[in-house]
Image 1 (cartoon, rainbow, N blue to C red):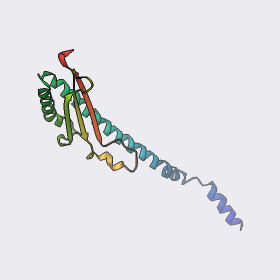
Image 2 (cartoon, rainbow, N blue to C red):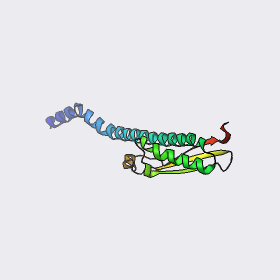
Image 3 (cartoon, rainbow, N blue to C red):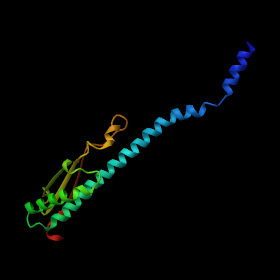
Image 4 (cartoon, helix red, strand yellow):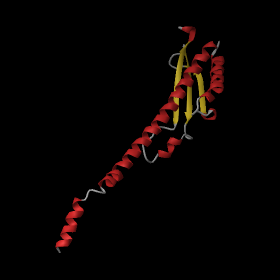
Length: 145
């Protein structure tokens, strides 16, 4: 019986596997944190691209003489320069260009992007994610002031 007690005490003092146990406990939490960091970084990059595209289209539409021409200029600008953003696909963009309902002296360009093709949605069960449709708007004043 004394040998069993001696082996038990020896096993309790042995710290050889503690690093593996700590790694097994900490690694999944770190992996989830890293996946969230990558997913939200990608999402914010796409959201910034959509906002930049809407702002550029609104600036381009300043040259229009009426609302229909401004809308056509904004849509043409998005069609021609939307492919310059690496994470955006032209066929997933929806453009609305019209006078602002609250203030008809302003013109609004609204761009919506369906981000369902982005790889971040693979993490949907693992981390909470934002909505799949990213919508941004830019407003210009008529008359240049």
